[in-house]
Amino acid sequence: MAAGRGEFYRNLASALWKTETPLPQSTERGKPGPEEKVKYTARASHRRSAAAKHEYSKKLPKDILKHPQPERNILEMLPYEILLKIVSYLDATSLYYLSRVNKQFCHLANDDLLWHKIYMTRFGVTRPWWMDYPKPRVIPGHSSTGFWKQKYFKALVEQELNYWRLARKDVNPHTGLPKQTERVLRNLNVTWHLRVQDYYGQEVTLEPSKVYFFETSIIVRWSNERLPFFNQISRLELHGLKKETHPDRKPQWHSLMLRQDRMDHPKMIGKDRLIKVLFISPGFIVGILRGQKVIVFIMVCLHFHKLVERSLFGSPVSPYFEPTVRWPADSSDPQFGLHGYSLHFVLHNTGAEIMSEYFPDISCHSVAKGSMVLGVIYKNHLSRHQSLSGNIRLPWKIDELEGSIENCCIMTLTLLDEFQKPFWCVSAPITITRSKRPLSFNYSGDHFFMNFHHPEGQVKMKLVWLHEEKQFFLIDLTLLVTIHKVNKYFCTNY
Image 1: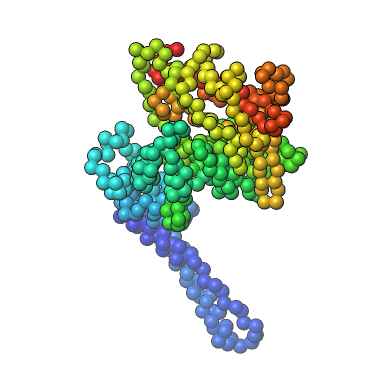
Image 2: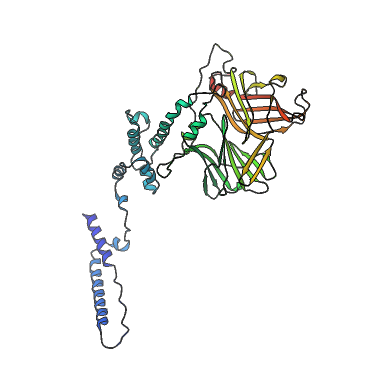
């Protein structure tokens, strides 16, 4: 009753306080005419309104007169449970767009109970929800964990991916990777977006300008005038997503794949007359105009190993992590985990392959400084030396600009364990450097070396440039894999 009486008096006071618009004064003087009568009538009405206002103001509460309360939205006055019941009739797409309205609707549309109902309705799971959800559901009105929302979108993508699992079961024995990875990526409309943020808080999201497919990897390139200057970039993020035919109808789930928050120590891997190319760990290649900070392009190299899962199954804030398969230690084999490896090794650029070779039956011949040394090509075994087709360079072309970065290319390696499962997969740029001393006395040409460092291992190569043949020869190739990775994978203790 008190609330109803206060609302009545509040509406009454607002109605009484509305003053009427005064009528225009008469320009004629003399006898009172029709306009003067209207003016007197308006004044009398105004005096009566003022008297009524004073009379009823004595009966109103003082706090209403001093601080009139603004009108509230009717949805804000409803209890949380009522609002939850209303939005429970919406589908997943409507809930997604509802979460973009304001903070209240964003919190309401992310409630775990709603998404659990949508998940159970779509996928027909008969198990109780608490068997898949170890934590109790959040209290209504508090922050939601988003467990069932994330689980729904992941299951939605996995349901569509199941149609292509049969095609991905056909594995190439040389690479240990599915043969139809490129076909699956194209048919699922998988794309990769680059999100660039500067120090002013402005963010730019770009779609790829060009995608280069190779046997075991891809190169994605972005070039756009909206890119900020290089010294203004504060964050780079690579997201994978499935490109919808009608993007306005369905929300797109972004899967974070790479992220770099600082650009303090980029490594220059080459330059030409127009640009210089920088490598930013963990995998961004940035081309900048020489003498300026203008970004010409940004590229990234992605290995095919679990590329579909990494592009679709990660969350917007954390990348996809492959479930670790640990092989039990074999007590009957004292060298378990140190032999039986196979290597698929590729050197290429954005246009063609420079080298592609498969090396079976690789074993560890020593352990040095916490790393397992795998010898692939020895400089004393002349029959194993490999010739490289073409020069080692990285061509590029953006609109009317084009060039070529000499002594730089992309290295993609796939190291398989003795069970023919991918053990170490890398795709990254690598540069060639001239050696100050001869690396082999079997060749009289110029000697070079190419080294690559990674937290999980290293790659060391030695090359010779033969002037008569005008080509490179790879005379030595050695892999160093950390013992920590070997012990973790094979459950050993070397």
